Length: 70
Image (cartoon, rainbow, N blue to C red):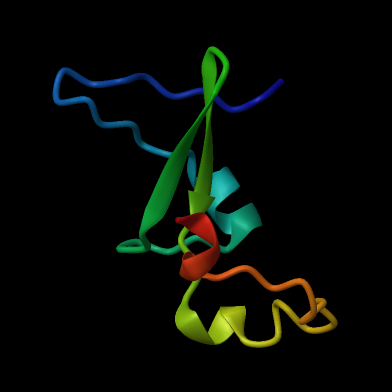
């Protein structure tokens, strides 16, 4: 069975310890909430160094910039 949590009166949810350990989440880490239908996707906001190389192999031709939008 999946872990569950209850929303408090202050709109806070405690994430189960087992889930935090499995995902390697730490206290003070920042998260983003993305609405998905009747639910929400919770993802940690990546650190800048984690984004290095994320676009490796991306096409540089057919690039659009702000001038193309007007």
